Picture 1 (spheres, rainbow, N blue to C red):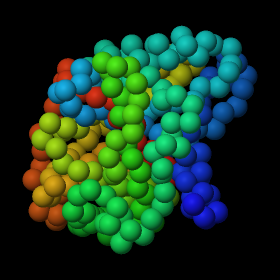
Picture 2 (cartoon, rainbow, N blue to C red; picture 1 turned 90 degrees about the vertical axis):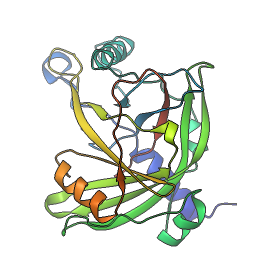
Picture 3 (tube, rainbow, N blue to C red; picture 1 turned 120 degrees about the vertical axis):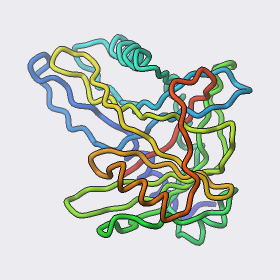
Length: 254
């Protein structure tokens, strides 16, 4: 049985993963505050399952004047034009099945199914603030179902100027190389259209561990490459687009 502290930690991670995006004030006269960090869908290559590519931030759209279904269709269409694809939202209660929890570094090393190598060579102002682990959610495009996958770890870091970033650590599989880009939907704009922002992913291998980091305004590409070099990792050439992919759900909480 989980303790109250464990339950609170898991609840906090799940709640922080829900995003409410900004809404155009001119058209609906409603104020929405949007969190930057969100639950994201990440796709990786998995040949046994027919799937397509991409990374798309899932958004919890408010019930406002425009049609939620219509906006979601527009967002997916915009992603498709960029060479990507996103699986449908997971069913109610699925996030809880991923058993997201905050742990110590020692606990993380003991609970993942790979030899965990701690990131090094980080920017001088970076401080490790939290380590989360969970089972990744996998979407089978052939069977049209979500299922619970293996355990992965997320290292959260904070740095000066209120910035933050994270490193995702998982078991390396040659057939499961992540895609080259992550797309974040910052829309809708004043006309109700999606606003996709593309970020570049970087991944490298240390033994049986895959480390994945994303370049954005919080952490640039040069800083990420410095981490890969310091870890003596083998930098991977990430594909884009790739027709053989499986949708994956990762909890990215602030």
